[in-house]
Image (cartoon, rainbow over all chains, first blue to last red; front, side):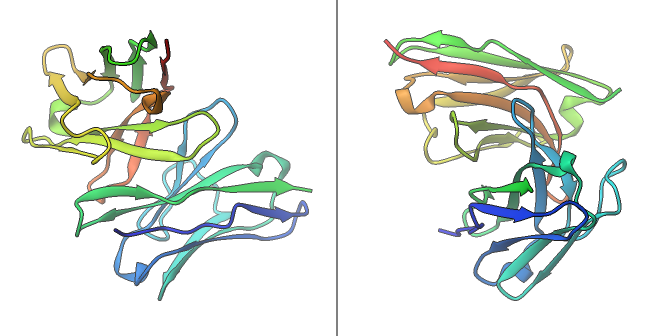
Length: 108
Length: 117
């Protein structure tokens, strides 16, 4: 079955750029969606279809998808960006929705 | 305002049953793809079930045969009937709307299900 692999944690200083990866076999052939989740809250969609942002999501959030890796990039990181981030795809072969294991972003 | 509100969670014994509800406002449940996603304590997200506008349904292997997703059009509500519950079903259950590109674009606040004796 298809597997999405994320690093467990990423740390970045305020004002710097955070990059969170999501690995999967030929993931570039799939649409990748990203969510952030703060403690005690529901997940929130921040990037969909690899690189598009829902209304209300700052331009600091961007995405890319190539080869075997999709990447969520957060520019000019703020303390409020500290959260868990999950990537997600729909796998046509299993007809299931899949999530990566999640990455905890720590703002130093 | 587009909103989803779950209810029905609680403590249930192993082998028991529970029915979750998800009331929608601001859009029509039966005209959209809808889904349930769960999150075990301290763990990641796991897709559970989905229902399409035409009424077809899909289930994760871990719940197939035990859980049933359904909807009530006039109440604009999505349901998840959970039977033969196991300890590993303990989680916060979120109701979510699926976009046309299969992203979960609207989420409820979640309802906690605890399976324990």
